[in-house]
Every structure is written in C-alpha cells, then in structure tokens.
Amino acid sequence: MDIGLISLEIPENCNLIIGQSHFIKTVEDVYEAIVGSVPGAKFGIAFCEASGARLLRTDGTDEEMIKIAERNALEIGAGHSFVVMLANCYPINVLNAIKSVPEVCSIFCATANKAQVVVASEGEQRGILGVLDGEKPIAVEKESDKNWRKDFLIKIGYKR
Image (cartoon, rainbow, N blue to C red; front, side):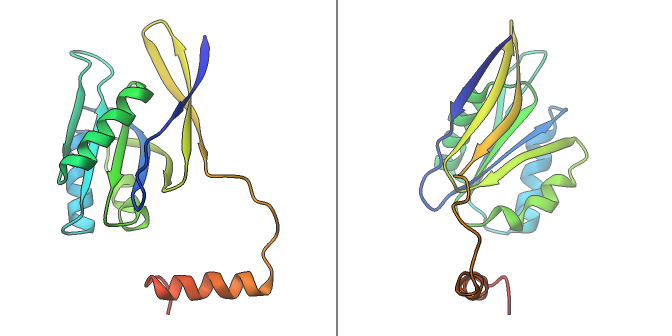
C-alpha cells in the first residue's frame, strides 16, 4: 500500500468540505441540502463514483466552484469521496444539512485553511485516511484573545 499527501486548491474567501458517501445520488442530495440551507449559495460539488462507470459526478450553482471541486476531487481520487466548494457562505451554514443526507457516511473536514488529504492507494483503490487542516496552535488564548474571538463572532453574526 502507498500513502500520499494531496494538496488542495482553496481560493481566498472560499471554503471546502470533504466527505465520504455511498451512493450515486449523493450529488443531487447534497445539492438540495445546500440550497435548502442557504438560498443563493455559490457552490460546486464533485463526487468520485467508486464502481460502474467510475465517473466524477458534478453539480452546483457556480461554474468556478464546480471546476475547483472537480480538480480537488480528481486529485484526491478516493472512491465515494466528495468535495464541496463554497464561495459565499460558511460550512457551518450547511454542515448539519449535509450530515443529514442519508447516504453521507462522514465528513473529513470543513475549512478555508491550507489543507492536505492523506490518502492510501492499493492497485485501483484509494481511500482517505485523514486531512491536515491549517497549522498547529502556538499558544493558549489570553483574556484579550477571548474578547477578540467573541467580538469577531458578533461581527459576523454568530453571537449577540
């Protein structure tokens, strides 16, 4: 078995969600979950079909986000994995809806940070072992950091 690291493309002001599913209907159901959570969301979905035609199944509301999701999903190349690229909303707005999709098995990450996917490959099979998301912490927050965090959450509408 070979283990590798795949660097992901995440444009500035965009977010990415990587998950695993088990059914060709994933693209349609994740699409509906997102538009039902954030009307007007700009996003793209790419799903790696693991059997049959083994095609990359795609959809979305924004051509650029669809193309970036396609590139990331093809690089990852793990059967039954999916990539969602978001341009004008945060993962927190859609994650519960996506996790509620019956065929979604797990979510590996939701981030705007630099991210890399750890993959294992054996012959024609490839799977996601995990995701490296952002950078490691450098210190414990102080009171001033807590105040900044709370003020930031108020500013972006997630706290009153």
